[in-house]
Image (cartoon, rainbow, N blue to C red; front, top):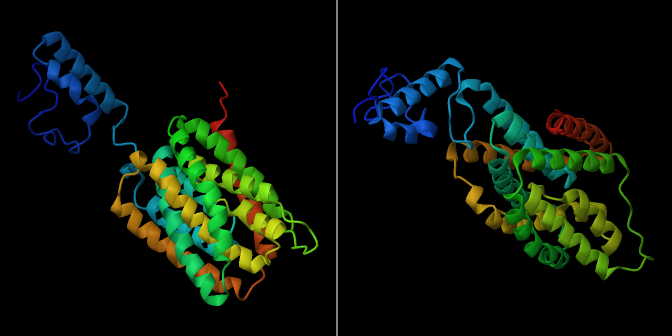
Length: 318
């Protein structure tokens, strides 16, 4: 059928003939199959005209809005570099910026953003762990045991997350950011050799971190590093590097649960991955020269502010 029976409309055989993109009206394409009926044809034409008049252009929810121009992508790439720096430098809290960057700067749907953040954060954590290990040995056994406690829960969290609507996930994510930022404002605990290790708390912390990784797409370093320090009496610098191993394993497991939501958008994955990896390398190098204590507090304030903004934006206020 070459065109709508009445009122011009869109040429189905040549969707670009009306000046719109090839997938511009993919969302209303089913209505065109009714154009043998003049009433349905007229209704479809009016709906099309309404879509154009309101400036609405249906696109796949996982792609950035092309009408935003190139600046959001450049800004998103720059912020991803900073995310990588914070992850390599602090070992905790940095990855929590990934989802807000992908949603509010790049323009992704929240479910696709969580899936893609797991890919970015996991890959960045692998590289960061390798560089930390080159500077000082990591506690591989403790890292793998902690990750093993969280792997099934990260997979479960990924499955559960897909059943929640986007605004609810963003509201919970904002509340988590406020909590994490508050924890970063407090000084990190120091290991006390005299304290008794708690296996139950170790398992519980591993399970909780795993579920948060799968459910909201965060690495969980803000919980892993204190757990290693308090429960395993691990030095802070070693705990930071070792936490990246746990983050990488949990992200890989959670990604399996989010796999239906992941679309391999190479035009996003490649530049953002390069940016995150470069930032992580810079963060690891900076950790050798600067004390991260004051930087954690500044970063914590920033995370609290962003978290509050996300909460206010997604509150169900009529």
